[in-house]
Structure formats: C-alpha cells, structure tokens
Amino acid sequence: MRRTCHAHVIAALLGCTALAPATPAQAHPSPDRAAHHSPARAALPAGDGWASSGAGTTGGQAADAAHTFTVSTREQLAAALNGGDATPKIIQVKGTIDGNTDAAGAPLSCADYATDGYALDAYLAAYDPVTWGTATVPSGPQEDARAASAARQAARVQLLVGSNTTIVGVGKQAKLLALDLQVKNADNVIVRNLTFEDAFDCFPQWDPTDGATGNWNSEYDNLVVYGATHVWIDHNTFTDGRRPDAAQPFYFGRIYQQHDGELDIVKGADLVTASWNAFTDHDKTLLFGNSDGAGATDTGKLRVTLHHNLFRNITERAPRVRFGQVDAYNNHYVVSAGQEYVYSLGVGFKSQLVAEANAFTLPKTVGADRVIAYWKGTAMTEEHNVVNGKETDLLGAFNAAHPATVIAGDAGWTPALRTRVDRPTAVPRIVDCGAGAGRL
Image (spheres, helix red, strand yellow):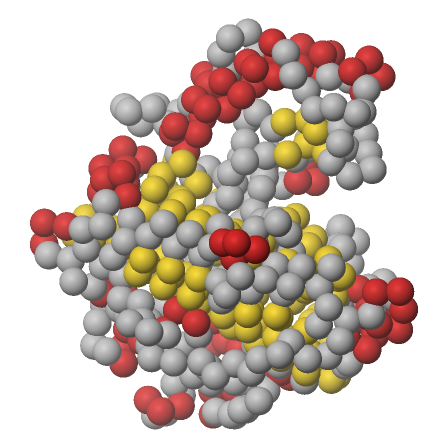
C-alpha cells in the first residue's frame, strides 16, 4: 500500500480552519481548482478510484447553455432530468427540493397518496401475526391497497438520472428532501455537494418471513446506482435528518422501518467512486450487490472505491458487499456510545473487499471484533486500520471471536487507482473537516 503524508495532515491536526496549506501540491484535493473549472463542470481526476478507469467520468461537462439548469422545485428538477435522457446536462440545485410536493409545489402527505381504502390500522389488523400467521407474506385487499398507494408515492419521489449528467448543489444549503434519485442503466454521471435527507416510504410492507421475527421493508434509497457505470459521488451528506429511526413506533415487535439505503449500488452497476461524503444517522447504509443469486449480472462488476468518507452513527452496511472488488480506504467510522450498532464492513458472497488505512472511533462497549461481519464471504484484505488511534488487527479480532466463520486475509487483488493515501491516525481530523455537503 502506498502511503503519503502531506503538510495538510499536520495542519488538520491543529483544526479544520488550518486545512489550507501553502502550496498547491500540498493542498486538499480539489479537482475544481486544479482544472480551473467551477464545481458544475468539474470531472473526476485521473486515477481517483474505479470511476476514473477507462474513459473516466466527466458527467455533464460538455453541456451547452440550453442544457445547463438551475432548479429549486421538484417539477423543475424532473423537467431538467427529462426522464433520464442522455443529452449532456448540468443541473444546479439551489435551496431545498421536496419530493413530496404536487405540480404546484404544495406539500403532499401520506394520506394524499393513500388509495383503494388503505389505512395503517386496517393493515395492522389484517396481518397481525397472531391471526395471519408467520408463514406467508401479506396478500388480499389491504396489501393490494398498500401496493397501489406506494405506486402513487413512487411516481412523485423517484426520479431517473440519465447518462452524461452532473447534478451539483449550489453553495452550502442545497438539499434533496424525501427524493429517491435513480442512476439507472446510465453512464458518466456526477453527483456532488448535495444533502440527501429522509427518503421515507409512507407504505412499508410487513414480511413475517424476513428473519426470525419478521421485518418491515421500505422501498426508497436516497441514491441508487442501478446497472450504471462511471459514477462519481462526491462531497454529499446523507441523513435520516428530521425522521430518525429511533423516533419510529414498533408494530409486531419490529420497528416500523420507513427508510431503505442511503446509497445502494446494485444490478450490475460498475466503476463507481464515492469520496468525501458524510453518511450519518441511518441503519442499512451502503449495499453493494442486492442478491447472492445475482452472479449472472454482478460477477466482474460492482467495482467501487470508497475513500475519505465519514460514517457517523451508522448501524450497519458501511458497506455490505457481494461480488465486487471494493476498495475502502481512509474512511472514518464513528460509533457513539448508546447508539444501535451491528457492524461496519460486511463481507458478503464472493466479495473482494479491501479495507486499508481507515480509522474507527469506538466507545468502550464496542470491541474491534464487531467491525467486520460475515455474510458468506470467504476473504478480505484488512491492513493498517486504527481503532481509537491504535493500529488494530480487525480481521484477527473477528476471526478470534468467530472461529466457525473464519475469513481469510487476502481479497485476491491490489487496488491501484488511488491519488493519495493518508496516514490512518490523521484520517479522523482530515475526514471530519472535509467530508460532506458544503465543503467543496
């Protein structure tokens, strides 16, 4: 592993305001300044993760004036996206855009989407495990009404992002509220400087067969990369925000889960770089590959780079990986005392995860053995990671605690597409000061 230490590392130890160094060569990476472009026309730098391979990722850099938009409403955003067409386009988001609004911009509630007699009380009564049982998923009038109601909400909150598109927030306050952006079967997309908040499902489905005690399942990710290639996701913030899971009720003994993923990369998606993002206050955060049975579409795909991202108060999946060659380095994982925590790095079926030079800040109640989770994966590369400032053998700790599911220590490949690697002990200050929306 190549490691470099720049002057900005020393400055970072002194505080966020000291991050600007004296010379450009030592500066915090800024493809915008380096290429003399505004953020709207920036391209991913060469060598910066999997999305830089091949033709690289330029997004809407070639957009003409007629396809350069500034949007501040859901209708304007949908019009600019134009159904996910491939015309080069730049979409600048100003202020907060709420997905749950009608064509005139008036807010829509869950009651506005409900149809065919759907009511939560009636749904709960119909599928109570005491009377419905636990062997089959719900069916019948209330489940049909739930699905019809969900389709009405989906038509408002799900928006397709086409090839050759840049979506970038203007300033420090650009937010997509309750929206599910879908980069689906597209190529060459950039998403930067946005806060994604609370993509909530009004109509979760009860599945008594999901796990030992059943689960509520919801539909909307903040951002999903579905069968798409060359995608750069940079300097965004993802959060449940106004609607934390901890505030939700329990039905049938399980939390009424209205959130799905913050960023999912699935269905043969490939060549993605996610850098300098903040993933916060969420349960199932990053899912790379959504099925063990997807080998026909996912084998040789799902190549993702994660670097300099902040994961704060995340319960699990940071990420959970199937199939893909995933390079996770220089990320900061923060677990708070008292929060619900399951794991960070999920080693899934045929995954090839490399986790190097990351920093983990853990409370005394969370041991290093809990950072990794086994999901039928047989091997990973784990080196030079630190826990509370001390280099720690995370894989060794996991294997010692789980002798029945030992994970080997070589993912079978070596990452090459890295522009720099910071010392893991410096990562907390560097990442905490630089990651997230509003920090370009």
